[in-house]
Each structure stands twice: as structure tokens, then as C-alpha cells.
Image (cartoon, rainbow, N blue to C red; front, side):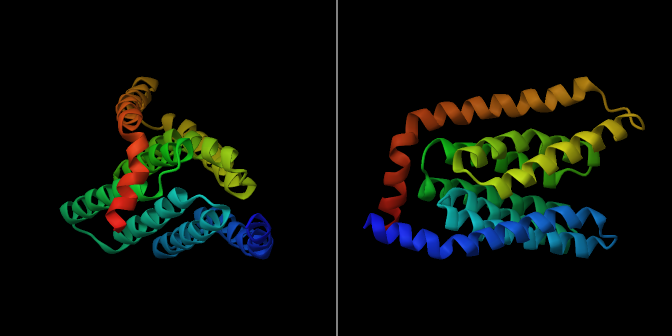
Length: 217
């Protein structure tokens, strides 16, 4: 069985690297695009590519969350009504919780969950500063997950995200009323939410895989 698993890994290694490179390229080029639809389409393609990349690397939670990001990007590009978009985003958060239960595999799943919550909050923001701040908050969670997973191409995305959003926030802070106090409030709010989710995960964590299995019966 171990030999078969190793052979399967070797067969899919080139594929997962290819999808990882495709996702990284999408992340690098979408900020350069002038067309909004083109930028969203490129972001969506990157999310889909990393969904396959993470699935082949053995991180089903990360793969599922990338697919949710893909759906959220499509909602953002195609839906103009704010209430409808918030409702659909709320539905994706519920789906996120269900998929987290089905794909739970300990700390990596928890890190992905925190990063995805921050990403979801970022996409709902109307303020560019708040959006970039939430993306910056979520990046370390993905960074930690990708370090645990051993995914250098995904780590490249994290580095680009942290450097790009940090530089952009510094630039925007000179032209707006955004202060360090506001940033700390966002961080504090997410930290409180993270502690709450972590406490719940410690309580129900062992039963999460059982929940996924029982739902399949």
C-alpha cells in the first residue's frame, strides 16, 4: 500500500507542481490587469488552480476553501445587489463549516479556517484599506499551513500577499485617515473570534471527523 501511495505521488507530482505554478502566475499578473473582469477572472483561475494543487498535496481542507474563494470571486464580479451578495457570502460561510467538518485533519484545517474567514471578510469590504488589512491578517494563517504542508509555490503566494498588501497599506495610510488604532481593532476582533473558534475546536475537534463520516452514511 505504501509503495502504491508513493508511486501515485510520483505520478501526480508534475501535475500538482504545474497547477501550483499556474496559481502563482495568476496571483502575480492579476494586479497588472486594467480590466476589472479580467482581474477577477484571473483571480478565480488562480483559486481553482490552487484547489487542485492542494488536493494533490493531501490538504483537502485547503482545496475546499480555495473552491469557496472561487465561488466568492464569481459572486463579487456578477452580483451588484449588496444584500444578495452578503446573503450568498453567509451561505458560503455555512458551507465552509460543513466542509471543515468533512475534511478535518487537525491543526492544518484550523489554520486554513482562520485564513479563509479573514479572506471572506476581506472580499466583503467596500474600503480598499479594510480589504487589504483583512487579507494581511489572513496571510500568516495560510503561511503557517503551507509551511506545515511543505508547499513552496503556495508560500510564494503568501509572501507576495504580505509584501504587496503591507506596501499598499503604508502607501494608502499617507492619503487617508486610516490609523494604527483602526488596524489594531480589526486584529483584536479577529483574534477574539479566533480564540472562540479555537476553544470550540478543542471541545468538538475529536468529533469532527466522526461528523463527516456519519453524514456520509
